[in-house]
Image 1: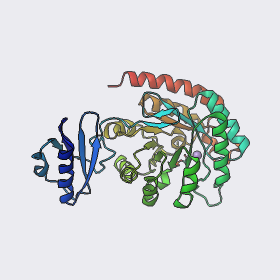
Image 2: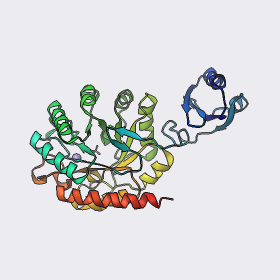
Image 3: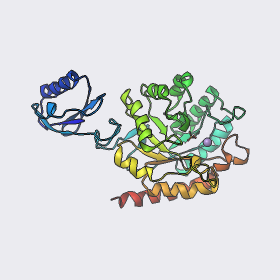
Length: 338
Ligand code: PEP
Ligand code: MN
């Protein structure tokens, strides 16, 4: 439940409401707003009796929260969350484009690709130093050496970096280097990792689990936000279905649903959804058309020799064209948004 205070409610009135919530054994989460304060009620088992609160001085109304997630819901927090990373604004009026290789392979590889991403107008550089792979025999990333390479590319091209954290063991290290910490599809319900992410001082890019519903995904985000980190970026990356023509099925309908239900920014990764290069550009354009706040796209200058996901990586020329197309489409879609 959300308890909305009058515009002119005093601090004492707010404190009384908080105390009353706590006396019931619940947790009060004050949400200061531009115009008025609201107080979220958390950790209630079952419905909260709103009669207890409606009559308290300074209370305007109580709103039943119908969703299992609270802090990430629009009901709790109507305004969009906007996240700033250096000069890049995620969740604002501009489309944010993240590009880069699947995995950091070498300094030369990352520098070459980072230069292309920069020249194409990309905003953020991606690249995995710790790679979750289906096969234990596959390339698992360069570890800290890979993070150092990303840091060099950041210094050279001024692009913030997003990179994946795979487990608690490497969390501190990844947090040290990354501007945005990625939690991958396989870890979306790794609850200890989510809780640790809630204590990180960096934004978290939370990918949708490959079989997760939107509610489960938002509950995973809720874990991070309840622990104290409000800076979560959601990333739709395709879900597992029966089809064989693509690696996953990109669920673009999740974008308007998330935009309606949550205030968190949502971006789309068409690369891991598609799995094949020829599908990435049309899906990316479609993601811009449904007003995703950003795109994350794999790019490689020599995909035939990539150690990971070469078959879905765009060539630099394709990425450059796509950046222009996506920005134009996003502008049209957001200007006509109903
Ligand atoms: C990635 O972005 O590098 C990745 C492994 O993606 P996902 O977790 O969506 O498979
Ligand atoms: Mn990849």
